[in-house]
Structures are given as structure tokens and as C-alpha cells.
Image (cartoon, rainbow, N blue to C red; front, side):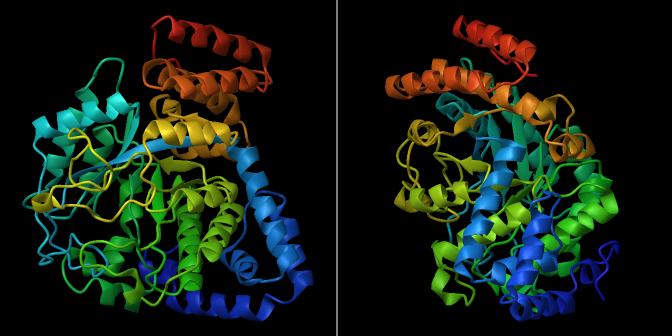
Length: 476
């Protein structure tokens, strides 16, 4: 029985409800009057249920599909504006005791194992700062001996301690395995941003097949992790499905059911939703899984998530190509990674994002978008987006229900837009190539005029001038 308020994974992610939702969507998808009623509700921009959103996803009418994409883009603009937040992953260790069939880190894979020392983490962080990054996603395999919580906490301390030239990591999100309330409390006290944990698949039989051994085999413990994180005081959490493993329609329904559960129990839905797809990696062939999806369907999934959960930040990584990422931005994505390395370390060594020594091939997956951060920034600017390195909400205490209240009322733009311009200015002055700086300065001047409140607009102008003159880290 589906119960979003239940504490049990099998009830707030009901397997029967997932299957019934897919069947309901199949029956309703050609009822265009019903589709129109759902779209009308969606235009209120207060979200949709998992069943309503599933009908939109299933509907293959061309005109209605165009309406879905148009509405998704409109919702993204009204909640988040034309800003795109940038981040980079930092892999600390690929030691892992799990047997995940889709991941080259799995125990017994034969992959070379590597774990960064604190000195190496310092060097990696400095290298990321020298690119211009201010926000990281910390990644690590699950291994209680090699990667205990104490190692993660010490690494966070090292990352936050690095102040290289004008650089600083102002927000470190953490993507590590499901853990205890006590450990989540320790992560909160260490000053993490968002706690991110991909479900990979909500289909319980499929989940148990794909995770044949290791702690991650426990479906309930993994699926209930976000509740423990919130019980530990972490009020910004990020969900994600690894599309391509199992049936996409069931995964879509399960993802939205998880968001409904967080809202029902904690009053705060997911801060972010990530939409990765299975990609080639050492010993991993995406075609060996039965859930593969086309680029077109992938884009529609993102658009329907944006409509169903309008307040959430949506993330697309460098797993995807430039072409796919362009499409996903139009579908409502608001955060992207740039110049990512998916090996353990590698930023300090330089080279291309997919470069690795033959005896140190520790990539979790191949990067499809291999551009430099400067190239990504210029691409966003040329497309009319504002690249943002802002971390102000986290550091000003606008997290959890405070952030959601501002976001759902669309008031967050009053802070986010000028903050984005100020962090972009920092990037332009400190790190940008000449062409990127020229294009960025023009963008900032245009965007300043879009700040509606004169007092905030003039404060932003003053801060931008102070940044030009050497000061840093202004935020509203």
C-alpha cells in the first residue's frame, strides 16, 4: 500500500503503486482532455502528483509534448531565472565493498584502487580553485576501513581550509553511501552543503539484482537514508535515478514518490534532483542493461520532473555531451558540472578530463563533455545564461524550509540574480580568458538592468566595482 507518510521504504515507494501508475498513464495518455486538465494544473506552478506527471510523460501527442517543454522552460525561468549553477566533482577514493553491477568501483572489479592523502586533497582543491570553481561535489566509494566517516570529515576540513590566490571552496556537497543518523549529524557539523545519494533504481527486485553484495544490497536502508539525514539535521538533500538500468517510467514514478514522501514527512522536498544515465566505463557496457532511453525521451523526462517538482534544482553532469546538455538546459536543468574529472584526483596533474595514466585508470565513467571550464562559461554566456558560482543561501542559512519558502514564492530570485552576477564577475576578473571576460562583462551589464529593485541593483553595481578593485565574496 502506498503511504507517503510512512517511515518504511516499501510503503512510501510502493512497488505496486509504481506499476499501477505506469498502467494508469498508459490508459490516460491519449485522453487529451485529461492531459489538458493536468497541464492546466501544472500552469499553477505548484507541482503535480506522480500519477499526473506520469500521464504527461506517457502522452506522445506532438502538440501536447511541445506544451510540456514550453511549460518546463517557463517554470525554470520563473523559479530560477536564466542562471546556471556550476560545480565540479572531486573523487576522494574508489575503494568500495559493494558489488554494484553498473559501477567499475565494485568490489572485485580489478580496477586500480586509489585514495587521496590530505596533501593530495589540498593540491586537488587548489587546482580546482585555480580553474574558478567555488562549489564541489565530494565523491567516495563505500569502504568502512579505507573510507570511514572520519576520513570524509578530515577531507572536508582540508577542502575548506584551502585559500589559494583568490580562490576558495565555499560549498562542498557530499555524495557518499547511506549511513547513520549520528554520521549525518557529523557531516552537518562539518558544514556540508547538500547531501546527495542516488537511488540508482527504485524497482526493489531490480535494485537487489544490481546490488548483489555489500551494504548497498539493503534496499530499505539505502532508500530510507534521506530520512536519517534529515533526522541528523541535514535539511538539503538531493535525489537521483541512474536512468538506463530499469524501466524509465517506473523509475520516474518512484523518484516523484520519494519527493512526495520528503514533503509529507519533513515538510521539505528534495533540494536537487539529478538525472544521470548509465555511461561506458571499465567493465561496464550500457547496452547490457534493458532500460536504455533515447536523448529525446531523456529530455522529456527532465521536462516532466521540472513541471512536477518546480522548486527543485535539477542537475546534469558531464556524463552527457554538449549537445544533450544544451537540450537539457531548455528542459529545465539549473545546475551543471564543468571540466570534471571522474578519476580519483587528476585535477592537479592537468591534462584532458579523460586522460589517465595506464596504470592509474580510476575513472568511474567516461566524460562526454570534455570542454574546459572557460569554454563552458563562454558557451553559457553565448546562449544567454548567467553562469553562477553562488553559494550564498547555504552560508546565509537559507536552507531547508527557509529556502523552500523563498523558492516556492519565487522570492529567491531577489537574492540569486545579483549573487550570480557578482560570482560571475569574480570568475571573469580572476580566471577568464579575454574573449570570455569581454562577453561576460557585456552580459553583466545587460543583466543588471533586469534587477527590479533599485536599491539592490545599485548595491550590486557597487559590489561589482569593488570586485574589479580586488575585493571578493559579496553576497545578499
